[in-house]
Image (cartoon, rainbow, N blue to C red; front, side, top):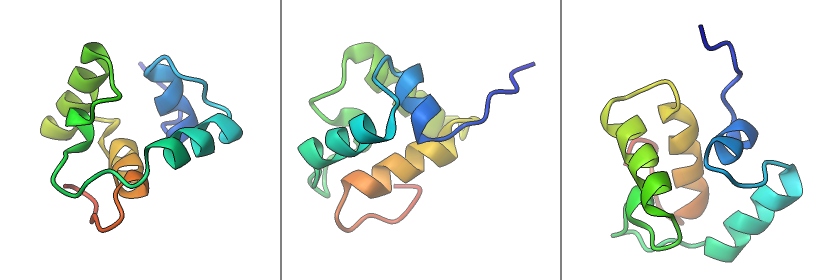
Amino acid sequence: MDTQHKNLQTLFEQLGLDGDEASIEAFIADHYPLADDIKLSEAPFWSPGQAAFLKEEIVEDAEWAPVVDELNVRLHANQAPGN
């Protein structure tokens, strides 16, 4: 059973990225704002594996979906959760 707490830090680590607060904030600053017509999983800065993971979590409404939604909102200027 996976008992890992899901948050932005653990999501970034799951994606193979640095999960410390400064690295997360730098990543968001570097990629914000993501155009409204680009889905998070289709952003050009993800590797194919990262993009597939993000898409699957949202499509399947899986355990990481709320955290992926949070990242989505943080990267889009005018985005509501779930898009």
